[in-house]
Amino acid sequence: MILNLVIFIFGLMIGSFLNAVIYRLHTGESIINARSHCPKCNHVLAWYELMPVISFLLQGGKCRSCKKAISFQYPIVEIATGVLFVLIFNFQFSIFNEFSSSNFQFLNLAYLAIVASSLIAIFVFDLKHYIIPDKIIYPLIGLVFFYRIFDFLKFIFLRITLVLLLICNRFHLIRLIFLLSDTKDLNVI
Image 1: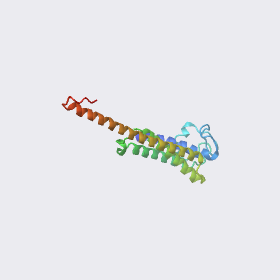
Image 2: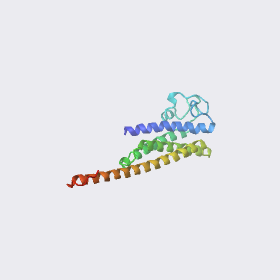
Image 3: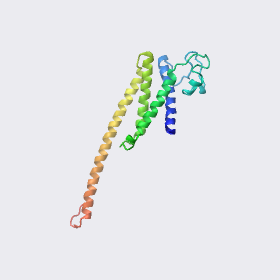
Image 4: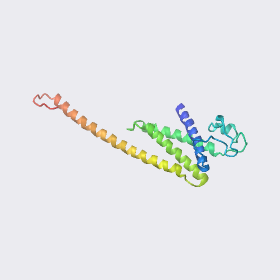
């Protein structure tokens, strides 16, 4: 329960970042270097105005400086991202996957979270501007391509390892049979 809450809060923070990405891709602002600000009056937001969902509720859905309404897109994207992160986490570590042969569950979790975040950003950007941004889609295609190659190589590696273990076990089984037998004239292995 506590872990789900932590994952949800992390998802809220990623959702807040996604809102900045969605807004700044359209305006051409830097995603990393520019400070968060009100889109209407350009008031630079303080740290307590950047808390996902909470600051929206405490401020009544309005900017503290100009008192103009803030779009409901912001808390919806944040909550949706938080919920999706919890669902992905619970699916990845569910009873169905607990006994899987994959030792790469964290990598799978990160991959699914990145893909889900990218799809949220694509969905909202397309909903607002009727275009799917290449700056999100091309890196996402590359990520999926390399992940699938890695997943395939992991599959091959696991199968080769299994075959090698079976071969080694056969040799040890043959050796054990000869050791248990009382015939002393067979000097094998």
